[in-house]
Image 1 (tube, rainbow, N blue to C red):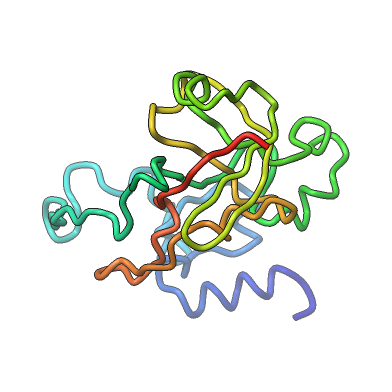
Image 2 (cartoon, one colour):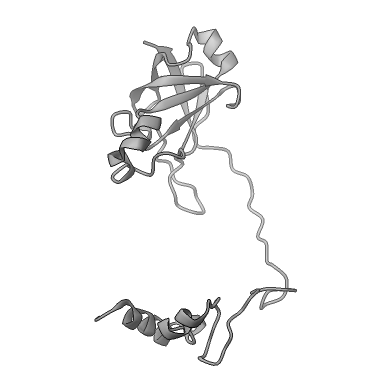
Length: 188
């Protein structure tokens, strides 16, 4: 390709919903797909009354409990996720000084009542352990997290939350059950 316009031309030639879009038209005005041919003004609202096949099709899913449940040894449910100031494995955001000043290290969020019963205060170093491994992180004690649940971001290589997670696959989607596993907490 000599320029990005040529890439857009190829996309338009292969993808019917973009068939009427090219850089020349985009320089004159915005276009919203589908825009199937060059005279087509685009589509301001895709579905105004119904979908192409009629009403939306919903397929109910039967609830299946998680593969792993709490026990006496692992009495808390860990859920993992993202935080605003870091992204995935930090290959890019981990190099941004400002973001690292805001979110320099992993924090395990613990419910206020749970933390009190374990003698954990805000910013204490805590060992989080599951049936698969253990990591340490500083505690972030608050009432936003539900009692019996702890949350950890998965971004930090020095405190890798996914060491703890359960690799059991969902029977339908075939994705790992990374969002729920049983853990224990201990102030260290």
